Image 1: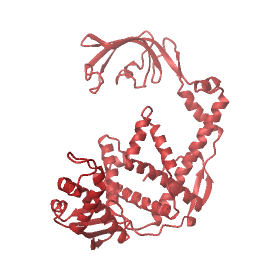
Image 2 (image 1 turned 45 degrees about the vertical axis):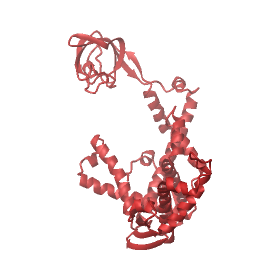
Image 3 (image 1 turned 135 degrees about the vertical axis):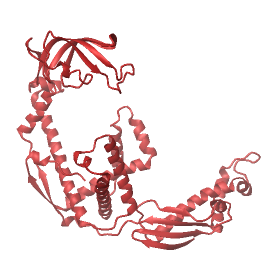
Image 4 (image 1 turned 180 degrees about the horizontal axis):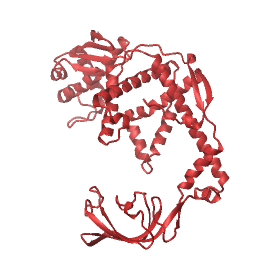
Length: 446
């Protein structure tokens, strides 16, 4: 095999590789000999088909497999010999006629272009300093969380007959819906409690009941949405003959043992204990997230080196596809929505570069510290992912077992967290107590 460097530009290297046809022929013979005991053809005893006959019948087909193996072996050897750490799959450009090569009439010649991982020395984590924000759980935080639980357990009590319904009140109603004067299936109900402002009815229905009182009879005119589930009703105007039986006011549930029992706890004290534990976990997670953000910002600022263009482009393409999807759905945040595509592309390309840079830095730091992701850690992550799809757990596990690339996507965040743990352990980290609103203050996300 002959390997020649053709071009060295930045982090890109191009090599010319040539494998003589004689070497391919030797590998073909070795492949046939390896296959021979398993070959079964009509007219021959199993495993006794002559090599010459196998070559005559399947030689070119087998040679295609040989060439594929040789491409993989020689491209890897070319990178190893030149101490290349590839930043992605090398690009292979065949220079010989493929048909002639598989017929054994031509040498295998190709050019390989590969991007390299840049050489750099990562910062020593022991020289880094960080401030970790922490916050204490107080009675106010616990009471606020209990209040949220109580507001989700609203009860509705009958108001005076003269009381007019307002938003967030409930009305007890009878109604019959008609389209062109004809009642339709599913359009009538008696004694239905409807919370005004809940958005559970056809758009516009609830709004027309605001201001009504017990005993009122009114026609509510609405149009079914064009994408309504029933094709017979979609886009059509309907009139609902509606009678208001009662107006009911909302009241939060009391924070007591009865509320605790609704959530499956024997007492309010036990519910408070669980809420306190939940809050502690949330505060710890938020504290770590803030610290991790500081770490990533620091690593980004302390490392400047050339980035593999292919890695940046792949990361940007992934981000940009998501941005475009959000734009089409009208879900861009207010700031991004004001920008042109050119401005957005510039901003998100910087984000792609940051992510690639940080990925390389974390990988290098992890490699120096000999950090690995264990099979047990991967298995736990796989199980956690499967639990997100109740009833389909086995299919999810099988998916990961059959897709190494998907498993790699599970490995990456585990590896990243282990490197962050290493940095926290080695760096000088000073705790600083702050108010909870400061702890949960949003950072600009990158």
